[in-house]
Image (cartoon, rainbow, N blue to C red; front, side):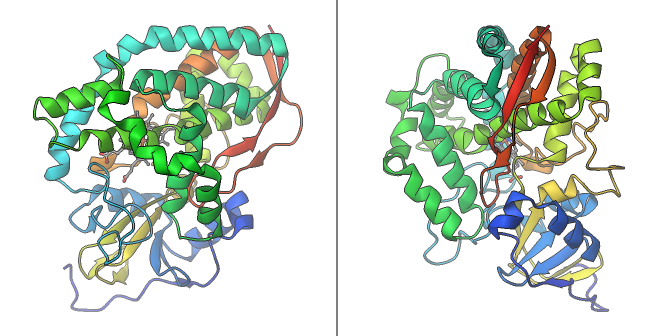
Length: 402
Ligand code: HEM
């Protein structure tokens, strides 16, 4: 416990509903309000501390001794009696257990392994971009982001589940990090039979030689992961890696269409494609909420926090904190915030797949950039409603060939 001699005040209280559907569709006004209330705000309706500012989010995510992942990275404490899901063997354990598992996972996704996939990621991107340019008007989510990610990512992981399973199950997972509300229930219904068949998609017999999944099973055989955990590690790739990347690519396309001056910079200097993706996931973080639990009563950021209480880092809110990012809502492809924004998390659990996501984005966006003179919105765009995933549902785009 930190200095409890003079008791600090409790954090300010917010009594509204951050999981209201209208708020989820357009969260920025509420996030601005919460951020100005305090770096920590008590969300009365659900009983958790919201971490609203960049500095505080960075500190929470970096400090497992005070903010454990072992209560789960969603809003409910998975250690409570009747917990409805087993912990993830990677995201929901703290160091030192986490450190060994993380080392083994990092090896599977090493730069050398990733380099081996680059050519095929590029070739798929080029072929898709040719078809897109020929079509002219396209649906940016379905025809670009989903079409690309759902081709290259399952191939690289080396599992052959039905492609739509990844998005519908991903949406269930991301809803379940929030409250068990109507939104969560609807997504479970929509996932239908895939929910029951989920585990079977990640079994050893479903994996292909050379893919990340088979490498994880081989690492388990070599004693680098505990026996019986490989399937769960493969599953966490899908939990974390599909919808998030689709969201990031979708938002980059949207922001490039909305900001022709930024597109023009990319045309002049195509290597800025990386900055465009990084900036899009800063401005609209794909994963909006990542939770920890306080390990003890403590002082934090000028407030007194209760023990064993959920702490929800509002990732998107922290990434738009004007204290850290001047003019935070502006999309600036030259801003250079990789490793500083928290869209990929921070600290021991920072995203192990971030370079895979970046490679996917660079390949598909680069292939479009080289074939397209201008990119424009061809109608209204809108959002899916999800408790923690911020992703587009519809994005009509016109690609004007170079
Ligand atoms: C734009 C795309 C992505 C975003 C925004 C994203 C975001 C995140 C965030 C915020 C975390 C931290 C969770 C925590 O602190 O508890 C995380 C962890 C993780 N991500 Fe990603 N992710 C992305 C892509 C991927 C991909 C492509 C993969 C798989 C190849 C992946 C696999 C993982 C795994 C396994 C973890 C857990 C790491 C650990 O606990 O040590 N992610 N991701």
